[in-house]
Each structure stands twice: as C-alpha cells, then as structure tokens.
Image 1 (cartoon, rainbow, N blue to C red):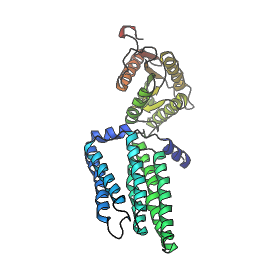
Image 2: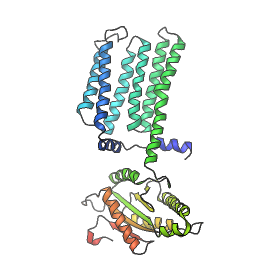
Image 3: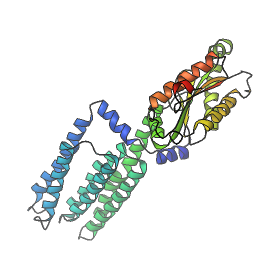
Image 4: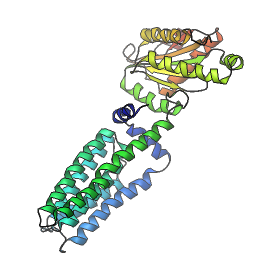
Length: 362
C-alpha cells in the first residue's frame, strides 16, 4: 500500500466505537479508564480553585474560576457515576472540554501561563485519537491550531518579546497539533494489521466479526457467502506450499475485485473465505454463482481451482415478521450450506434462505 492509499484509508476509516468500548469492557478496562478520565476533571477543578485570587489567576475569579471548578467537578461526577458515554455524547463531551480549556485560559492575566493551558488539549486529543475517527481528530486539531495562534498572538501583544511568543507557539504546535495525528495513524495501522490476514490482506476472522454486525444492522437484506477451495490439499501436495499460497492470494484478489466495495470480504481459515453483502435471496444466489465462476477462471500457472459455496441470506423486506438473525447464525448457516455443496462434489452453490421455514429451505 503506497503512502497516498494508506492516508486515504486512515482518513476514511469510520472506527467502530461500540466495538472498541465493548472490547475494553470485556477486558474489564472501562472502570479504570473512567476513574482516570474523571480524575482529570477533578484535577482541573482543583487547579481552578488553587489559582483563584493569585497573581496568575483570572481577573474575575468569582465568575471565571467558579465556572472552571464547577465544570471540572461535573466532568468528574459524570465519568465516575454514569455509564460509559455513547458515541455522540462522547464527541460532545470532548468538544465542550476543548472550548472550555481555551476560553478559560484566555482569561488568565499571565499570558505565558495561560498559553501553557493549551497543553490540556493533548488530553482531549489523545482520547479522540483512540476512540474516534480521523475526521473527528482533524476538527480537534484545527481548534488546537487556532488556540495556539491566539495564545501566541496574545503573548506578543501583551508586551512580551515577539521571539518568545514565536518560541511558545512552536513548542505548542509540536506538542498539541502535530503529534496526535501521527500517533493516531500508527495506532490505526496496528489495529488494521491485527484485523487483517497477512497473506491475502483481507480481513481475518476477528475483522469479519467486527464488520459483519455493522452490515447486518444497517441493511434490511443481507447475505453471507462462504467459500471453501475444493481439494486444496491436493494443490499443496502436487504443486507445493508456495503455489498453494499463490492460489490463496489469487483467490482472495479475485473475490475482492469481483465482490465490489459494498461487500465485506474475509479469509476465515486456511482455504476458507467469506463474502457478505446487502443482497436479497435472488440477487444473493446470482452473486454467489458469479463469484464461484470468478474463482474458477483459468490461471496462468495451470492450477485448476474451484470452490464449494454456501449462502445464508436474510431478506427482512420479504418477511417483515421474521426475526433478524444474528451474524453468528448467518455465518453458521453459510458454513453448513457450504459443507453440503462440498459433499455434493464441489464447484457448486447451495443457498439457505433464513426467511423460509426449515422444511422449505434449499
């Protein structure tokens, strides 16, 4: 992947916030995180109380310090006493904190100390970089850049040496603006690698488990198509494992190219692949047969490759009263249909339509 494609993929990655929160909850990590995030708010409240009435404190402590202290206390109580926020509330909380940090420290008469308050934007930016998308972090970065400029101009217009204002601005620029996007890209790369199959660059099973629920939730009709390369052991025994790896990577490329951008494509096992797409029953069968033919197209090395294909499809529009299946049930049904295709000789498509009673399924 070249640099441009890498940056574009990072920029367009939606970030599955519920999955991230669910993963942390499963590891019992949300409690300690809530404690630490709330502690940050409590620290801000204590800071506001400590500097009130001092030479570096706000000129109107009765209002400005009270707002800062109250906001810090409310922040701490929200994180300590309430459940982890949903995605929208999470973004709103960080946006409010960003604005409050900048506005509050602009009220501090010591302009150099006030500029140091911009360092708190690193805290909110770090949270955004982990839990939210590149676009959310970009908005925060733009606000941080504006804040750094305002704080630096404020120093220069307050009687300080312009070079000092420039130096402070450059320090804040490095600490507040430039570091967080770079760290988010590195984190995104590591997360992407952990969800990808190293041989084929498709999603692995864990990546499929993240993407498939999103597809099931967003579309009334969805199909899961399971592929198993026929007699793959014979390919390895006859041609060697290097050719076997080439067959796997070539099959992955053919499936990804043929399935299109709306589909989710994954390698779930040794010679097993899954394609999931928002398609109803008739379209799902046609798509599975088309993909089956794509896999079987002649290869330049002379190796014949076919696949047994199982399809599980649910069409909520065709059967509004039918309960929506879980992603796990769709995968299990597709696997079962695929094994029936393999038992029938392979290079075959078998469909299990989950909106039909069991006695009427294919």
